[in-house]
Structures are given as C-alpha cells and as structure tokens.
Image (cartoon, rainbow, N blue to C red; front, top):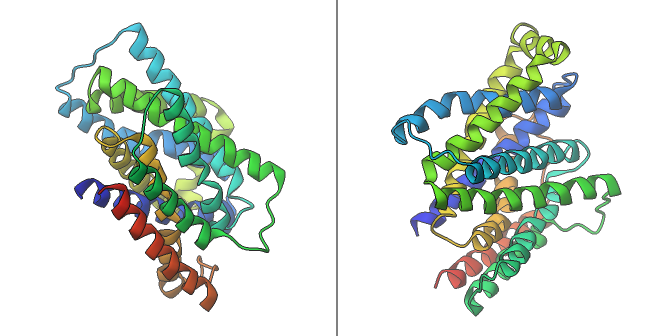
Amino acid sequence: MKYIFLILLAHFLWSAGYYIDRVLINKMKVEHSISNIMVSASLVANVVILPIFLFLADFQLIINKINLFLALAATISLLIALYSYLLAIKNLKSNVVSLLFQLLPVFSFIISYVLGELFSFNQILGSILVIISALIISFDAKININKKSLFLMVISSFGYAIFYFIFVNLANRTNFYQATIFYQIGLIIFGLFLIINSKIRKEFFGLFVEKPQFIILNIINELGNAAADLLINFTMLFLPIALVNSMSGIGPMLTVVVGLIGVKLLPKYFDEKPSKTELIKLIIAIIFSASGIFVMFN
C-alpha cells in the first residue's frame, strides 16, 4: 500500500509539472525556453540533491566499466525522453499528452517480456483497467495529433521506459543511492556542457534579471520533478517496472484535478476548463483506475 501512495504522489507532482512546463514554454514566451528548461532540469535540482545522496551513500561509488556504461546510457535515454517531451507539449493539450504517454506501460511490458519477466492474470488485468481509465479521460473524437508530435511522444515514452530498466539494473549492481548519484552526475555534466555555449549561458542567467519568475518556477518545477523521479525509481526496486509504469494511467486524472485547481486559483495560466462531459469521464476513469489498482495488487 505504501508503494501505491508513493506512485500517486509522484504522478501528482508530474501533473503539476506539466502545467508549469506549459507556462514556461507558451505563456511566458521565453525565447529558446526549451534549452533553458534543459539547463534547469540538468543542474538546478541535481546540484541540490547530489550532496544529499552522496552523504546517504557514505561518499562511496562502485566504479567500473559496466556501471559507467549503464550510467551513460541512463543519462542519454533520460535526456532524449525529456527533450522529446518538451518539444511535443508545445502543440499538444494535456489530455493528448496523457493519452500518448500510455505508450510508456506498453513499451515497459514489451521490454519485460523480451527480458523474460512473467506476470499473473491479475497483474495484467489490473494494468489494462488502469490504462483504460487513462484512455477514457484522455480520448476525444476531435483529437488532432500531427505526425511530428506523435513521433516525439513515441520517442519520449520509449526513452523513459529504457531509462527505468537501466536504472533498476544499475541499482541492483550498486544500490539506490549510488545509482541515483551516477545519473545525477551525468545530468550535471550535460548541464555544464550546455552553459558552455555563450548564447545559452547569457539567455539562462539573463533570466535571473529579466524574468525572475521563470527561475522561481523552474526551481519549483525541477525540485518537484526530481522528487517524483526519485519516488518512482525507488518503487521500481520493489515492484515490477511494467506494473509501476502501467499506473501512469492515473496521470490523466490527476492532470485534470490539478487543472481544476489551477483554473480556480490561477486562471491566468490555466485555460483548460473541463466540461460536464469531461467531469463524468473523470468519475468513470477513477472507478476503472481504482478497480485496476485493487486487482493488480491483490
């Protein structure tokens, strides 16, 4: 039960982060905002978290060729997934993003099958019910998805799926703290590599003066995303990766909930007002999702 709570909390943080990403990219109209977000994603949270995890790991790392290779692969797959996601959401509404992110559990089950992992009937049925809940709330007959955005979301979902499998493998070879440290170092190196570019560096640090709200939102967003990532990575050490990712189906519901809260509190930045039909779909989706989680873990 505690792992389910951790997964729910992670997806709530990601849902809030989705809207912050949209604000940063579209509402604030910051030039080259994606490169700025990539710098923030690589540096801001990780610079804060890395010392903490180094302390928890007793400042020890098991360094060998395999672990370094896995750390590099994890970092690359995560960066590709994030970059593709940021490019895609520029032209997609939240329900479409949530719908396409259901490719993540699909890829996870495929990879698990290839690796020889087996699942019980209840686990498969529960996962299907949760995924259906996401399809119910996300599907819209008027959805128009361009090929580029679809391709980007496929790449993003596959990248995240690969990252999770690599991370768990690395954690099994070391431990949770060390595996986290490895890819955090990789992200920090990437962030430093980005700000070597004088144009990106001037734009990023210039925001401290020109748009301080961008920096504040970025810090909040990246700390929230980092916390969500750590929660999911941790639960995957105890639950099958495919099952954890299948619970991404609860993401669309939480996205709608966060949107409802946002419309009331910050209408300037939240413009997606659900209709009565969408609220009914939300209730039905919650029933499917709750049933799926119950079946999956019983």
